[in-house]
Every structure is written in C-alpha cells, then in structure tokens.
Length: 623
Image (tube, rainbow, N blue to C red; front, side, top):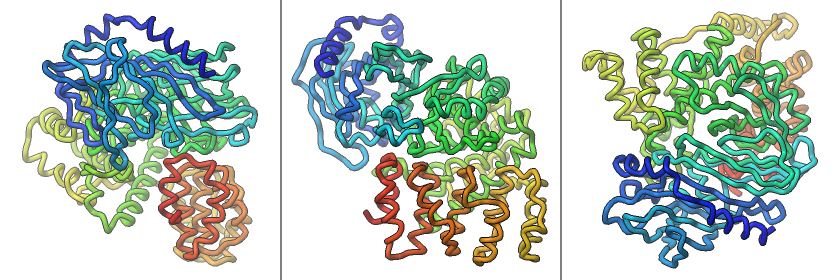
C-alpha cells in the first residue's frame, strides 16, 4: 500500500500542469480583500490558495490518510511566505513550484487552532505541495469497524470538517472566508466506494482509484470524504441517495421528495448552482443531523422514521446550498448568517411542499428550542447575541440554537413587517449578488438597510435590528407563530392532566411534531403510574422515531421510570448524534451525581462516537 501510494503521488505530481482557469482567477484572488481570519493562521491578504489538487490513499489497517496537497496560490508583491493550518498532521515534505524545499516551519501550537505551517515563497510562486499523513489526533475522521456499520460487512470512514477540523485531515487555509476549487484522486481498498463533496461516482471501481472535481470554490469546512460499502439510487433529475445496501431502499423512500424540494427552492431564490444534490446516509455515529457538504449532504440515519416526518432536515441541508455554501459567513463570528438564513429557508421549503400548518408546527418547535437555549445560557448572555465574539475560543461554542432559531425569528419578523413578496425579492438579490463569495454581518446589515428598507433609518430602528443582532435575548417585536394543530394537542394534554386517563384523549393522525409538542409540554413531574400508562398506550420506550425517543428518555430519567433504562442504554450505544446524547447524559448526571450510571454506559458507547460528541461528553462526565 505505502509503495503504491508513493508511486501514485509522484506520478500525479508529474502530470499536474498549469490550469488556465486557475491562472485567470489569480488576478481576482490577489485583488480580493479578505476578512481577517479569527480561527486560522492563514494570511489571505498576503498569500492565498486558489485551487487544490489532492492525492491521497486511505489505509483502513493503520487508520491513516496519506498523500499530498498541491495548491495553486496567489502571492501579493513583496510577500515571502504562505501560511497553512495544520493540527495533529505529520508533515513529510514540501515542494515549491515542483522543487523540494527545506524552507518551511511549524510554529507553536494553540488550543483549537493547532499549528501553523509557514512556507517560504515569492510573489512569482505559483504552487506549493505538502506531503503529509494524518495521525490519531485527526478529530475530523471517524474510522468505524464493520460491526459499527448497518450491514456489518466492511469498515467505514467519514470526515466532519466543520467548524475548524478540516486542518486535522489535510493542510489548508481553514477559514470560512477563503474559498478554492479542487480536484482529487483517492485510493481506497478494492470493493469500496469513495465519495467527496464534489462530482461523485455511483458505482464501485475495482481499481480502488477514484477521481473527483469541485469546480465551484468552497471553504475548507466543506471538504468531505466518505468511504464504505455503499450503493446509490436516484430519486429525481438531480437528486439521489447513497447508503449501505440494507438501508438504501428505506432511505430512498424517506427522501423521495428531494427533487421537489430542489425545484421549490430554485423557484424561490434562484437556480441550484451545484449540479447534483445527493444525500449520503451515514452510520449512526455521525454526530450531527446533517452536514451540508456541496453535492453530498451527510445525514444521520436517525431521520429515517419510516413516515417522512423528519425530512425537514433534508430541506435544511438543501437550503444550505444557498445560505452557507453559495454565500458564506466571513468568520465564525457571523455564523448566524449561515444557520439563521438556512432555518428560514428550510421552513419556507417545507411550507411549499407540505403546507403552512406543517411549517408553523416546525416554527413553534424552533421557538421552544430557542427558549430552552436561552434558559440554559442565562449565565452567559453575551453568547445569545447573533453577532458573536469568539476570538480565542472554540468556534463550536457559537454553534447553538441562537444562530439557528434566533436567526430564524429575526428573519421571520422582518418578513412579517415588510411583506413576503418584498422580503423574497431582497433575499433572492442577496443570494445572486453574493454568489460564491463571503459576507460579514455588517455588510449584510448595510445591504438590508439600503435594499430592503430603502435606506430608512426610522424603519431600521423601528424593527429593532441593532437589538436583534448586537444585544442579548429576544427583542419585543418578535413575531408570534400560532398553530391550530398544536392547539388541538394542548387541548388533549389538558384533558390527560385533568383525568389522568390516556384513553380519554384523541391522538388520531398525530404527526411527529404533534407528539413532540405533547411530550415537551408535559408537567415537570410525572408519576410512575402516568409514565406507565403513557408508555403502555403509545409505546414511547420502543418507538422507532429517534426524536420522540430522545424526549421520552429524558422524561424517563427525570421521573425515575426504570422500565426505559435498557432502551436508553441501547439507544446511547447505538446513536452518536450529539443533539440527543447531550440532554440524555445531562439528565443522567442530574439524576445520579455520583456519575456511576452515565459513566458506565459511556464506557460502552464512547468508541461509537465521533470526537465532536466525545469532546462535549468528556467534559460533562468529567472524563
């Protein structure tokens, strides 16, 4: 493997030539003024990457990715170095314009940021090549053995680069404000399929060699790679699903509305710019609901409920194709521009596909999430602002419900005040005028005032825009969303509380969202007899719906409902989604200050979790 990979690397370097499209982009890149990175060592206003040629081999036996990253670069006049981000990478060698050099340095390490790699260049340098290998400290990577997958027939690898983990599996300028195109060659064991956030194959190549092309510029956090025993099924003109063979049909059924979602989104805010929109269903250890890698959304299998009730997540990741991927936040301080817009767009897609009543239920659940987050962050009000200050902090600290749900309610409030037609025209213009570029909070607000409010300072103040963005909490002008379907749920919940009789309530045809509203609004204390009656009637402990199960399990722990204990343990061992893990383990910590039970389960489950989840849980369980 190593010998073949070295030959593969050398032959690739020889064949890399100057690309006219990269040469043409050099002047534009040099002229660009970049936001100063907060979580990157890169100095893009001095020397910046334009294009990446990645050539790597994936070694499952040693759990290593090894190879080279060749960047076409632009260097401003008089500049003598280019800086890359690395974290726990082994740097094996460097070439400048194809010539080996010893003029490179690895600087001191900083928490979260890793180590800078500085390479001596001149303003005539066209390319640098970094030969490297990943190590055990590659937090972006999760290596799974066959038993940790659905089919249990082959190992699996996936990456999670957001926010600043790309630097743990390839040297890069790891800032959302720096975009580049890329080509890649990836060598994997024979019989396995490799996929990236790029043009992708749909069938296994017996050689194990796959080539990829991403022609649109993307930031490093959208670099993605997955390798496993995977099949593909089309569900529309540009939409399809990758999954392990045993999961494929259920995933294709669950996601059969994807093409409709793409069409609806394109009609609203402009043409889909990425060619294909495919979803890869990962093993359950994936730490998030989804990750919006261009052309290849990563998705958790916990959304496969069998009734399409959790497909809002697909709409969310699709919406990122405009907000986030097409128009990107300049720094992680501006993260709300990514997620707030995406939740807004997600719910608009769901409204078009499934109706207003459906979307309003999602909006109210979003409000509930926001209220819970605000309560949990009462001792850190500065982090409840939309515009954050994350200097010298892990950008993951800003990935809270504030960016998502406060961001959504800000935009929804604007829409209600100026009218949907006018707001849609503004958002469509926002996406079109900032295509394949980055934007800061300040520039967005300038555009909002000029284009949406016709420059009116009075209207700007009336809408409390500064308060929304720069102050903690929720302004008083927030829009109120009502749901007749949730009103029905509340009526039945009141009846249950009054009668203590589960047979007295009517739950016919309830959706997942109605059940969530029912459980979330239960009294703080529910006695064992009530828990037993609810479980016997509705089967919450053994539900196949992960969203409902997660809420029920927290209730069970808080109320000492022991019949759920085994199901809770099995869920925690099987599922690695941080959204579910943190509240369930958190409830166990409160219920058992000795930490004996949560630590015992965590010891069994930890190997199944990605570092994104273990970093949170290690701290919670004082590991």
